[in-house]
Length: 435
Ligand code: ADP
Ligand code: ZN
Image (cartoon, rainbow, N blue to C red; front, side, top):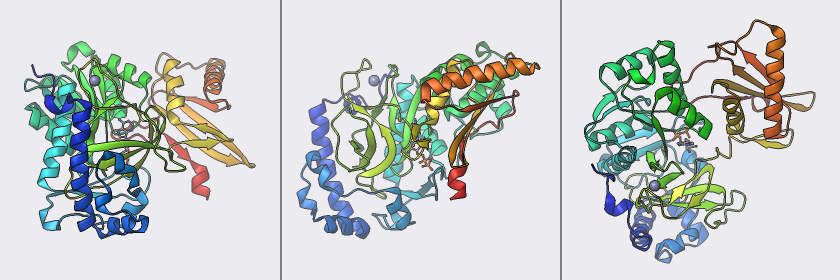
């Protein structure tokens, strides 16, 4: 059984990979300079000429692009080929503001699907598998990317899209799905629904899940693995750079291998833009070196993360990124303290609660307030007020230990928090709504 989708790339000696990247980068910079006036202006302003970029070591000389540039150049300002050569448009989910669109040539679609095929193979997928794609289909890249990857691998592909949760379980059983692809929050919901339908993991054939498109914790991973009886693999991507499959996890489950033959990663200091040494935490930046239609150079993702290169037990040599710790704009500053939703999720699951919660931040009498509604499961539910108050106090204490600030915890009845079928919305910051 093939262990790799493309062994010569995935296990390439690092020096050879660097040479390949350098060759592609030089060509790509020329392509962008000649065809994208928006980026040519940025390079001219910085005084960088295409011939100044001779290898990956010169990458830092290039100007950055950010989501603000994409919005300014919306929709076609960063297109590097005539529109007639493009065959597809996808769009971001708009989690953090106005959507941006990305264009693809057929070659771009092929390379993207190839990246997803690598991810499916790394999760143990092959032509004997039945792959249920429950990411949303449509403009969102999740459905399209994994669908294409699943076809390439030769899996029997179930294009379910998200939603219609009981039918998902029914098809999973009837057709014997072995691999599930969706957001981690939807996987948790599917696990819960399976149990609500009176079924156990023994009633389904799933062996692996490929979950991404939103941040999730290790605690959440273990909880999903248990409820569905599978091994859960992380997958990372963003529309601007292609979609899911920019990086994927192997069986070691200690970070995601970046498809470096297509995307060169850097970690920068988000304040100064300076490139940080390997192993430092900072903002992840990508340069697409193979894309034709929408080739972004030094695109700032706003995802906070760390890169490590080293031998992986799976045999791949591709550099690894850690699970993103959230986007710089997911971070909330509450009473002066930096808080990530993932820290709260970690405590909740450790304390035996489900990953169904809602964080609400507001400002009252010039002071920030933090309210966390957490769902109890049927066993935790009690009709004694005192019991619930004790549990709330205990949980608030555990969260205070993690964050350093006191939240107000509200335990709410089972099934009262809306479930997510795509990317979960777990934070409402009313301070922003007032501004
Ligand atoms: P939007 O920016 O509107 O959410 P995308 O659908 O393109 O649009 O989402 C890309 C973003 O999703 C990434 O920049 C990252 O913040 C998040 N993301 C994707 N995969 C993961 C993952 N495996 N873990 C954490 N965050 C992820
Ligand atoms: Zn590995």
